[in-house]
Image (cartoon, rainbow, N blue to C red; front, side):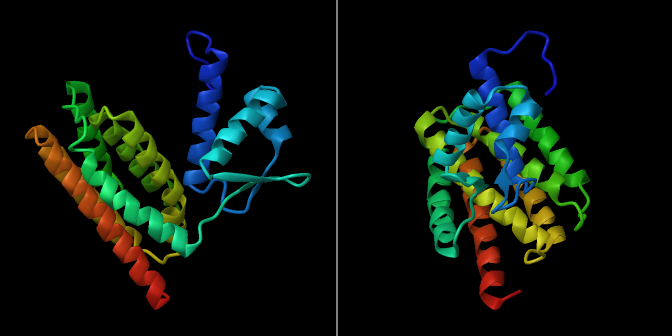
Length: 228
């Protein structure tokens, strides 16, 4: 891990390790079914097994990992029915973000959204390496979480996103989704959300995001059902 100018507290360090492991799961560095080695992770992050196990336990409570006594800790998968239920809930919650405790974007956050729009426009489809695209979407979701001050809502929303992110990325890897099409659709979403934010319409920004979640789910479900 990169060293900061000031030492991290034990809590901050644990949260940072949790974020790193979560991101690796979401972009399929750790694919579903993979067994994680506590010894290797402890050595990588320079911590003992005890705090590492607390981190893994939090990821397990988020349903990203599951442990089997005497066997090890594994990355979870989602059945189609679970995926459908989570997507339907994400669609409904997306609209609430613009209505419950909305927070106008700061100048810095608007700059961040403009940077995301530029990255989306510049990113070229690469079927061999969809990871940069997956990371871009994750950055966009985390930026959006700053537009709502309702912490319980944002915690649930992010939790559900992390559940579905890896399945969506897996669809890119397996070519059940068209990478160029998904990239084009996402670039339009970021541009439309940015335009709404610049106009000061947070409810419109939330509506745009809700629509894109719904369309993404429909495309993925249609390809699944037709066996594409």
